[in-house]
Image (cartoon, rainbow, N blue to C red):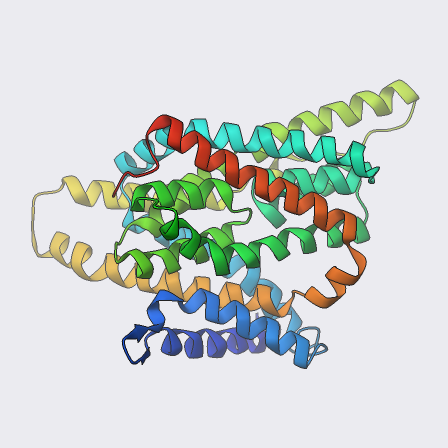
Length: 358
């Protein structure tokens, strides 16, 4: 853990500066509208461009990687304390048609773009899965199943991160501009944004923009329901690859359910169970302190952890290199991203969820 400490502390400092900046005002304009996660990812990207070797420094790289993965998962887990199981069931069932529509759209679009652009099958598969389910996590889970190499994984992750960054910067303002209600926007953020990190950043910024609490926890709930799709999709890919390998006489790649399952979701549900139990207890000093102090503290800590994770992601994003080398993958990523956005908005309009409020 000591090896990771400096990198983690570096992200803590950047997130702290971002949090302070988000609480400032310039005249009548409140920086809270921009939000700490956006400031964090921008500062991370700027540092990476000015000092490109810094994120890869031996004293920092392990901590930065840990922050982008584990700290983000911790943020999601402790967000569970702000939800009860009734809210999770409601948001999950309500958003399921949108989730199924967006996942299907992304996979179909990726397949068609692979044919049109004559792209590598493995990169196309990774971008399609990453766009449709949960970004880098889905790519990491799918890569060993289809036997993708490091370069293919890096290229796919970079494309996903590019559109994650754009989503974090643009979607909160875009959503408000086109008239989303607060609940409608939470479903939009959970279904149209690729990676969990960017969903949390988008929703956290939107809370300040809308002046409504609950967008972040609702969007994360929708995203976690969407994340579970990684299980049947990677399982189907594994079975297909094993079948083809056996047919050709080669040994199929090993498949591990333990590796692909997003276990942190169980801890998120566990935290929600605690809040649900406390909610049905008779009112006492304990329940009041839990609701008014503990839950609020957990929400603040979750947002700070999100800012840390966004800083780490910014530090690991080389936009200049990506734009230079990834023309076709970027076009595929953009097409998937645009299609998911359009379908999410369209399905919500058809189902009457677009204008709903929390």
